[in-house]
Length: 262
Image (cartoon, rainbow, N blue to C red; front, top):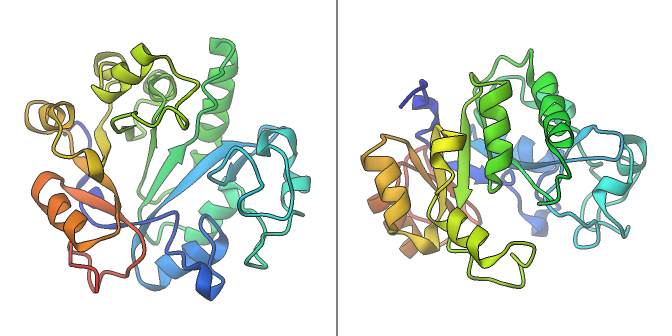
């Protein structure tokens, strides 16, 4: 382990501790506050608005969670914060809003969403630099991670002190991963970007464990292995056997150990 990531060895609430039946929607202020109330670390997703501001939102499109259509990247900060969610009165948070809310109280995993369409190194570095500048004065524990090794490589080049992780899976869902060629999917599945991106940890799909690439990263290169998204007792048992930490959803662990869903 190149950095002190002992804080990472605990459960993290997936997209905050959300429960739509209670009006707590993923990646919103309410879901983060629920994680804080239970003193759990949390994972959230980041993507850029048209003005470059980094927003807390998972999807490329707004349709699934809000009453508005279109892409997050086509709207600026003011427009996005006026959008109404379907199941909560919360407004969309910026990364700065998130940092102010957490204020170092619990650790954060920040998954950076990629559009897989960076035209050049300049646009890639501009995006990563905006995240770095926003995080610059934050004092709490956090790490960035992404499926896109270009993003993680950029963090290695521009801010090597920030803990960074590669997110991966089998990449068998061609409908979801259609922007990627078969070779790109194979390369991502087997973590072949490891020498260039030099991740500090790996986050691998629970449904794909055990798998040779994360086993090698964990055992040979001593990288912590997180797994996502743990929702069932069977998945929890697999997480306990093959990983160091989990990202969970749909239940509230009674403590900070990998304890079974009720």
